[in-house]
Image (cartoon, rainbow, N blue to C red; front, top):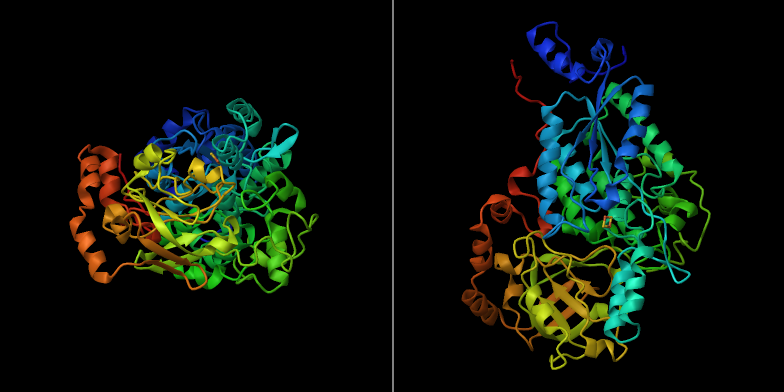
Length: 581
Ligand code: FES
């Protein structure tokens, strides 16, 4: 251990031959830990989001065992601890509502305990940002191990993708093209192995973000959950985290502004989820990196989407891994001089480029050449205007190109309940060229900004064979969804944003080329309408219920600021006041 760059943090607990050291060690010894494990070995925390209520992370106990083997082999001592597990599929009102709660749990668990480094076991959408946010606020050596995607879904002899097939088939039911029985038959086939959603949804996107940020070993994003190589990667991550302690390779050395630029470019190349915009901002805020929506335009725009995965394209994560995975994409970007910072450091001590420059690429259909992309300009499109002064986003690779410049009449839903109540009404006054607008689904308006921005189309429109319309809201959208959908309008309606002022029949202009989202009414009219609006009414009602909801509504930041709590932004380090028994 002579090459260790600074004393072990855990020595503050276990390193003294006195009353305190006695007590810290003695209680740990009730687990059968021999004394020599406390004599200068790095103590490695394994932060586990295992839960049977988070089905995507339900295999994590086995994953943790492989990390432990790697830690022990490298001379460390592993200690596994649970944190709040926010699973996307079950948790109400949204898993996003508890992302910040989980991050607080992670931060305090890391800082308060005798660990020198941490392995983050993440998978389902919000678990990845939550754990990275919490760890970033502590800044100790950290490595991400993702649970991996599910195997391809299967239905009627064809591959089907998590989430995406639900949106597609449910629209077909509404259009009268398939029966409800056919729809329900796809249910078991969609999720047939352990793992996360197998599309390029938010889970896969965030796994790619973690890898492109340099916080995981190469290939972490795409190895299927049930592939034995996933467990090898967990083992190797256990090896590596021990070395990271000795090298004092903390998260702040990895999560630099340059690393975020690499991640934004990667998001465009993979056709990643719009949720990454919010999560990367929140992670950056925790480590002290100033990231803005303008960075998404500056770095992402003009980047072709080359990964042909659902929901934008055809394939699923299994094919992505077999085609070469994220290293192959990064190599392709780098060889075309499109990887912004090749020298960004990663957790294995090498630069991002060193990790990927020789990465094999096996399938040009799944990972397409840059000059034959899925979408020529796949970078997240940021739009602003009098309807979204602080910005809104749209995912070009999931949109209809012709609708990205569009002027239409607003068909307004005051909130998601209003939308559900009226969207199937045959008398709804709506035409194919109209723009569907939904309010009060932002961070405050709908407890964590529900993924309802991809409003299903009215049946009368679907029956015309129309499959896409422009939709605008302050909501989020599942990474598995698609459409010409303007999301994250900031400020949200429930925070007094101009979205609250839109009325049926108003005209709206969307121009993704110039980044403009404009409500065609005068400034005076807009101000007068907003003066009539009481944005706090709904929020006050919810806040009066107390508890975490109250904290959330009172302290959550807007979408362009990452939806973190205002008091959580920043890196607070790992120092903790000594406790004397
Ligand atoms: Fe967990 Fe999609 S619901 S990854």
